[in-house]
Image 1 (tube, rainbow, N blue to C red):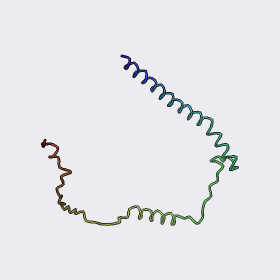
Image 2: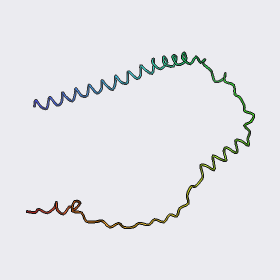
Image 3: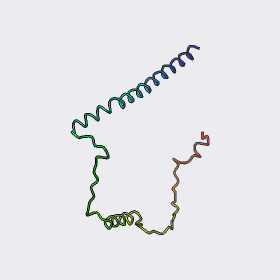
Image 4: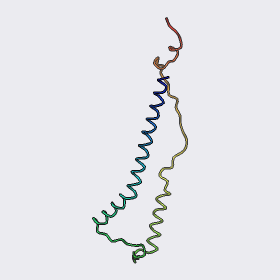
Length: 116
């Protein structure tokens, strides 16, 4: 009976230890994502000295040399590259039966008979 109680108490210790490890890791990750990530982003902005840009402040610049013909040539090249068949081989398989040499190491008959 004493051995059974020790196994149960050991199981509870393992359970509590595992739960503490998992929930402390989750708490650490939550605190990092809540407070640590904004601090790291602020430090990144200070180091790179960039200003925040909103999407509406970004101007769209048109490239005059990029015409519809260039786009058509690029898309045609991508289409030809993706749909290219490399080798046309016939689908005939030839299977030759390899002759296995007898090996007493792989024979199970020696394990089934009791030799005296």
